[in-house]
Image 1 (cartoon, rainbow, N blue to C red):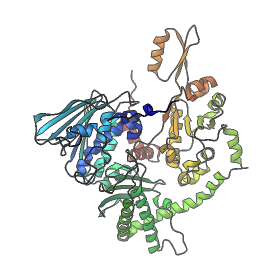
Image 2 (cartoon, one colour):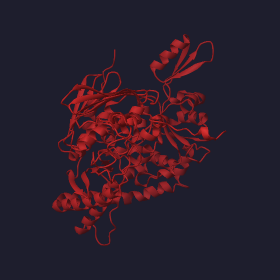
Image 3 (cartoon, helix red, strand yellow):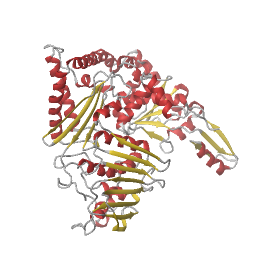
Image 4 (spheres, rainbow, N blue to C red):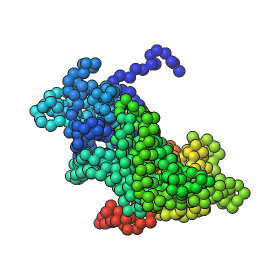
Length: 630
């Protein structure tokens, strides 16, 4: 293979984005598609942050495009001295061009890298930008990945100000180009919680609907939204402070629950992986609670401090920081994690001073919080022995059960290995015979696993099916979970395509979400998609698998005469059929499980899997249509 001067390629303009879109938007699936929306939406929110806008409109258009419009200042329309093009065309066609590289145009903003607008343009079939500024509306048009087809042109006079962008994503880049209203609604609602003066209107031309989002109570309302229907131990505690040019806004509440939910934002951008501000909050919270517990003699001199996990059990908290451009630092273009070290110091100081004051002023409620924390500590200590039993199952009854259930694979490297969690021994038998024994392990599950949302940690760890599953995966559970020790690169839930199979999927996903969330966040959990039909052409051996009625109808037209086999369960498939349709990496269909929105996921899990039947019934009545089509 040659390696010479001519092999070195120089990508011009927006070519790098189209060549490696994952570097700029993370992926080309649904998440990456919606990242384009967030880039433009965040630009609009930056005008809100700067104090120049209070209204954002988003429209899902009939032709499949999407429009994001704000009533801010509008992008400057003069000629850029560097590119000799209009500033609008420069922003949309040049990487690292924007007004956020110093504090002159934006003191605080969510966008930093100056690539957001140009990345959206690069990954679009077409894009139109309209700017209202200085008494006129100006327009530019681009096609085929950012090529200018109409440079900035002055149109009609107007008194409006702001920026309006409409784009249609490039179907040759993305796996899907369908925008999901539910995903956009959740992000929009979060933003209005972060900015009480902001109103966002979401239009859907396809069904002619309009949703309006506005919050007057900010983060307090955000916590109420997440905890709707849950039993609370404390009121919502909220505090704000400006320290060392960093604005900190926090709201938190303790509820009767065994899980923690912490959402963090930096300059309105959700930091999915947390970062320095979240770490500062946790450190400040732990130190403050322990300090107060000793002050009121809940912790005696001989007692060890409460651990952070004890203190955060049952806690729901929202952390929002606003940081000047000169200080802010994210991880990558997708901004999933905040690196600004000053944010850790400031957030910790704010939590310690404000929370300690609240505890002193609200002693009755403070003691109820401490009682909750004590119970969490006691439960942790009580379950420690059970955890040790899981780690040390050698020579026990569990090991004998495990050795009889798990069919291991030969490889040990989790870059290649995968484990199938299979419904029942019948399907397990077919999977064992059909698998590639080199890298595929099989674990049959007996019936429906425990609903962990309704069980205590002690009950969960004592459950045979759960403890066997935890032992097979090898990475422990809950606060002890270690993603580095996970034995398999893929955990694949493989159940029948019926209601029982779906129920088992949901129970397992609830377990992974509550006790092995990192496995989901790191893209290690999947759902297998077995076909519903096998259609064979009469007269020869040609056959196809169909995953739905539409696919089946297409094959019927192709084959003309045929035989159809309907699969009611995995156990009805031969080992060869199960391999080629559902287990072979070259032909199978897998759904990667991910968490698009943590606040929505938290609400859905607690609503649909929790103890409160009333709120579950209300959600089902509002969201499920049981009418059958005639």
